[in-house]
Amino acid sequence: MKIPRSQQYDQPTPEGPYCIRFYKHYADSPAWELVPQALTYLEESGFAIGRGPQTPPLFTDSCMAAIGKDGKAIGFLTCDCDGESWDITLSYVLREHRRKGVHTDLFYALRDKAKEQGKVVSINCMTHANNLPAQAAFEAQGRTKEYIVYSYRLKDEIVGIEPTESSVAQSRGHSFEEMRMPEYLVEPFFDTGPDGLKSMQAFINEKAAEGYEVHQVIERSTYQWVLIFKARAWS
Image (cartoon, rainbow, N blue to C red; front, side, top):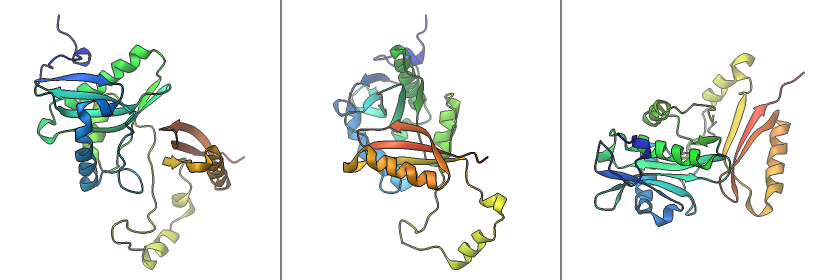
C-alpha cells in the first residue's frame, strides 16, 4: 500500500530524494542554516511582514524540515506550536527545489502533527499582500484567508519621502462610504515590553477610542502578540 506523502516522516518522497522530519526546536535542526537566506529572500523580494526588518523565528519554535541525502535542509517551516492555535512563523524552500511539492509536504506533515495532538483547532500564517505565489500555494493546500492587514504609509521606509499634498487632498476628496472604517484591524507584531499586559491594555484602550473592540488575541512569544480588532457595531 502506498503511504500518503503527508505521513512519510524520515522516508524519501515520491518526487525527490528528501525526507520530512519534525524538530521540537528549530535550533536543533539543519534548517537553522537556511534562516538567514530565507530572511534575505523575503527582504529583497519585498515580501517581508512588519514595520521593520523581517525578524527570525524564536529558537524555541518547532520546525518541520525537508532533509536531503546529504543531511542538509532544502526547505523548512517553523511554527509556534503552543496552545490550541499554531502559528507558522517562517517558511522557505531553496530556489532549485521549488515547484516540486516540498512546501506542501512540509505543511501536510505539520497538519498531521497537529492532528496527533488532538487539541489543536487551527494552524495560522501570514504573508505579504504581493506574495501571490505563496497565497496560491496556501489556498491549494486548503487554507482559508480570514483577514487582510491594511497599512497607511506616512513615510517611505527606504528614502523617507512624505506623502505629497496632492495625494492628501485626493484622499480627503473620497466620499464617506469610501473612507469608512475597515471592519477588521490587525496589529501583527505587538510587543508588550517591560510593562507587560499593562501596555497591551493601554493599546486596546486606544483602539477602543477609535471605535474598535478586541476580536482575537494570539500569543506569538512571551512578549509578542497578534491583536485583531473588529469595528464596534454602533446602535
